[in-house]
Length: 173
Image (cartoon, rainbow, N blue to C red; front, side, top):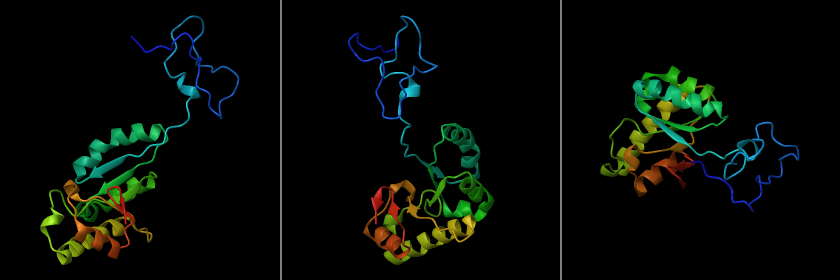
C-alpha cells in the first residue's frame, strides 16, 4: 500500500514557489495523500548523474536513458573514452548538442593508469583528452576526467593538472 500522511501532518509541503491555489492534480475527497505531498508542489530536483560511453553499443543503449533524463529537463555529464571519440566524433558532438557536458573517460576500457609511470599517464591522458576535444570541435575543451575502473593515483592528478582539468571523479584539482 502507498505511504500516507499521519492525520495530524500538513496536507502538502510548503515551498516558497508554491501557490495557495490547490493543485489541479491534487486528489479530492478522502483519498490517501502521498506521504510527501503532491508531486506538483515539490521543488525541482537537483540532479548529478554521470554516464560512461566506451563503445558504439553504449551510445545505442544510452538513447532510452537519455530520453528519460531529458524528458525531466535534466542534463548530465557523459564521460566518453578517447578511442570512442576518435572513432565516432559525430556521436560525441550529438551528445554535446543535446546539452550534456562531455568529459574524458580515459583512452579505452580496462586501462589501468596506476600501472603506468607519470610520463606514460600524461601521454595516454593527453591522447584521450585531444580526441574528445577534437570530436567536440568549435574550440570546446572537456573539463572533467573519469579514469577507467576509477584507477588513479598522484601521477594521474599531476597529469590532469598539466592538462588544466577541473576535476577527476569528484576530486577537484
